[in-house]
Length: 492
Image (cartoon, rainbow, N blue to C red; front, side):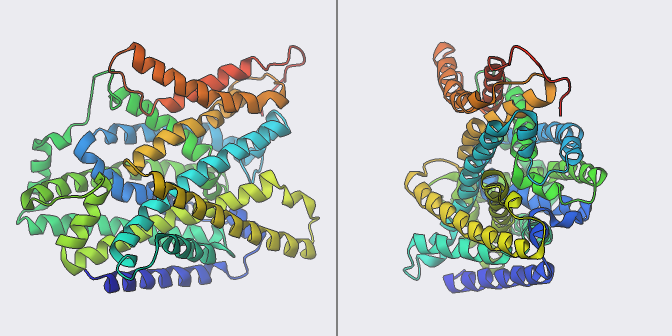
């Protein structure tokens, strides 16, 4: 597949996304941008969130990860189901009862202004880094297979990608994203299924025969019982559960779509449906990874760099024009579906949580225009920040993107997990002004604790359980901030 043909595919798909954006953003206002006027159909939100939940990270990294961790990631996926159940039964009722636009408003109601700002800042840091990781992966592929051919520098590719996302989300926000994510989820899933079929056909086999072959290989290993291993099944299950609670339930990006549903019941239907669909979808990605490795071994295909390069190398160099087109459509769809909602959520959090612009303008048409103008400026600022972070990642990338993303998320989402847990499951009032100290100290303590465990228990590897450790440390730290008198009589 030539760079010219890849560029045509990229621009054609982008045109389709812009067309959907135009259709859905007409008559959009600030409420449309932030919460979709609370009119989003739950089944559309659930289906579209598949793409946002998976992203370009899953599209490339999970298949590549099979070579080193086999199917152990599937245990983590099962943990996701438990996490979504907690979100549906514990968090969503609170968010809807308080009629929140930003979920971090809860921390302000429960503890105070400082806690509210602390939670918002930790989200901004977490989501900026996470969104940048996801976009970096896609831009790297575009750069390697397209823009290097034309002598275009990496920084220009990054700017182009963000400008495109900026343009189609600027007006409609969540109202647009709910529908563009539906389109993008469809293309991403079709691309994975077609890729499997193409590879199986190229190996003169059938899907059934390949399925049996995969399960006869080491790739199909799911359970690791060694407690010292970072892939231990208990660690993975708990990690998957709490990563879902933190990175979905306590994340404005993912919750903003749920809050756009008509009511709590619809939002809960969305969560339940999403959790059940993600199980077979992730299994398909793992199956694709095993098939890719078998195909690469069959043809002695050498993959340069990290395991993230396996899927693009096979698709673009060995599956012909159709395989290349399918891969790029799926990759772009996965990238857009996670990047657009992240940019919108970051804009929402900075506008409402940090700058509190929604409180500065009285509810009238003139104020609506001023808020819209400021919100659009913030949208641009967030794009610039993400561009800078992506360029920084270009200098330090040295391992599979998904491992980097989840490792970092364990540290930055931990304080959010601890704060929300303390608010929901205790009735204590705390000294609000000291919350930032606990939130900042917790990741540091968790990091040194993980290193200490590896030193004390020779061969022990801290995995995704770092998130749980971090949240627990935050929870314990908040116990020291309890006011001795006048505890709250009820929990918000």
